[in-house]
Image 1 (cartoon, rainbow, N blue to C red):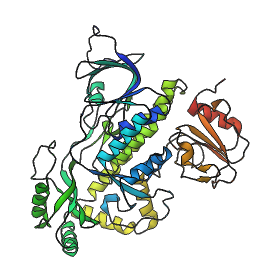
Image 2 (cartoon, rainbow, N blue to C red; image 1 turned 120 degrees about the horizontal axis):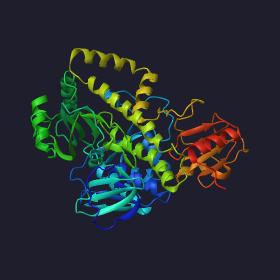
Image 3 (cartoon, one colour; image 1 turned 90 degrees about the vertical axis):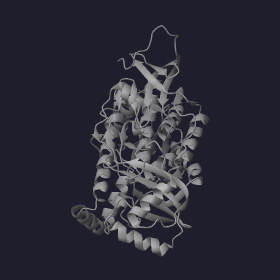
Image 4 (cartoon, one colour; image 1 turned 90 degrees about the horizontal axis):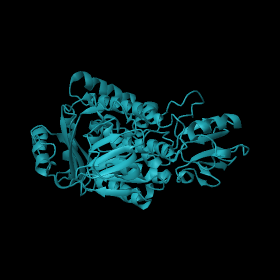
Length: 489
């Protein structure tokens, strides 16, 4: 497939296993995951400096769990703030539901430049190469690999290319992959800043205005700090310009009649409500992940998490393909599993936006849903959806646990997630009579009859999802071959 003309007269390019376009959180984490398996990785980032604006993003429970599996979470927690795992869905204020069933049942607020830096440091520490100021402008793929052309004319050769280059992805455009959905209709300003007005005055005015305007709030974060959300109508139409504190003051005066004496912003950002999903996540040797594959409004705070979880799903599968032990269809399961997840996220953000409409119908539905969320089961279901802990991949027939995440467990050998840090599969064997046999170079075997698990044995994929439950060796061998290829020897 020829996606951009590249002259054959130029010098032969250098060879990599995987080139990743974009060193945001998704690209950096994917690079680190690939390096766990010895894959030669180059990450190309077009920007030479970190983003000038500072935006706080939230890491939800499933992302925290997967980061814990790689030993990355403690470092991130040092730089973030824990917040209750509640109030995500349509900003309906409810308490933390019971039954979240996780050792990491909280939201971690962290500055986006900080998480980018920490994940890039991780990728570099395990041997990935990162080049800033390098932009992909062309690509040609053939049966053996992909030739990538950079803006300066340099050509590079790689076995696979992954576009993690954001909503305006050049890689996606060069591939000709459609990005259907709804364009942005409204834009919103969001930031965190101090407010000089008394808290009681702010709370009263917010209650008054938000009764008819959902695209507005001031949410306290302690010590005089507030998260502020206001419509962007009337602000500069150039979305490439970061908003200013004066923009927020202006919009607060328009909406609430006062600017509440806001000052000392920690971060300011602007976003639209465009919602789009790539028609394909893979075309031959080129794949898409993160915002290059899906975009949606930030309500519920799912976008960054969706990209990180793409990286966890793709990393071990692409590494298996590069290393030569992947079953034929393994790489196809990336799109088969992750695209439906993105579809569900797009749908729930559409629903949340509808619930913020000031129209009488949506207001009535929001009121009814708020009443239903007083039921723990309803509140738990909606928080579990956004936090991605209720996700079940369709892996075929089997017990309900198949295709689901497994919570961190206390075992004789230590915590379960600590045993997954190598990025290998894991057989958790309560019978003490099974074996991974010829797959021992790809799958670890842990025998522990005391572990608190309502299953005799289970096989975990490197991304922490259950691939098999049972106690029969022949059935286990079939599933080992399905996910980890042919046995060695």
